[in-house]
Each structure stands twice: as C-alpha cells, then as structure tokens.
Length: 159
Image: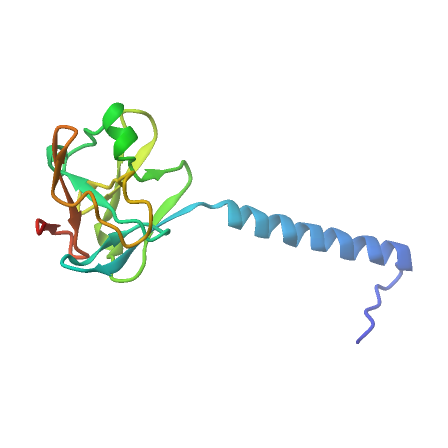
C-alpha cells in the first residue's frame, strides 16, 4: 500500500480530508441511486408470444377505452388494474425487446403520470399473482377489453 502525503497537513487533518472526500462520493452515489427508473421489458408467454412485462416480470396490459389517447381506468377500475405509475423525477427505460422509442407517459386523473407504450397507458392485473401469468388477457372487465402488447406496440388479441 502506498502512503499519501499532504504537504503541510498533519495526520489528523489528512484523515479528515479523506473522510470528507469519501462522504462526498457516497452522497453522490446515493443521489444517483435515488433516480428512479421504471423498467419495461419483455417475456415470452405460451399462446401469446413475446409481451411487455414490468421489472417483476408481471404482464402489462392495455385498456381498449383508452384509445391510445388517455388514461380512462380510474377509481374502482384502477384498484383491479393498477396503472404503471411514473414517479416524479423517474424515467421509463426499455429492456429486452421493448423499444425505448415507444415509451412515453400520460397524466393520471388520480394524480401523477402513467407509463405508456405506443401511446397505450400500461396496467397490471391484480389476479396475475406471479410472473409469467396473463389472466387478464382478452377479458371484458371494468368497462372494456384488456389485451397484452407486443414489443412492436401492437395489440395481441389472442385469447
């Protein structure tokens, strides 16, 4: 190990400088870690092919009445189909076969923003309790039809 000398600085002062520099580096790392990221990825599912999923591998859905324009699933609907929220200061990132160019965001009538893909607001389904499930596919529930999306942003209507 190499010794570092600080000219004109005593051992205690040098130690204090090292502690201060370490604290600054740690603070910077913690600030970077706080930059939230919402990851939209892909997964291959039986009968459906490759679909969009969240960072936990949960299948993501679009809601027909949204018409690629705005979030319409609110209140009781959103309790069954939670929207993929985008916290303030966070950004959505694409992984797997998902395309960053198709990611966006829309205002949520309940407050905040919702992640969109090819202009479709994204939702999860409460009955999908494990990754790889798509129990909400082709359901007519809460005022409309629900489908998964392909990485190209197309609606997959297969049941």
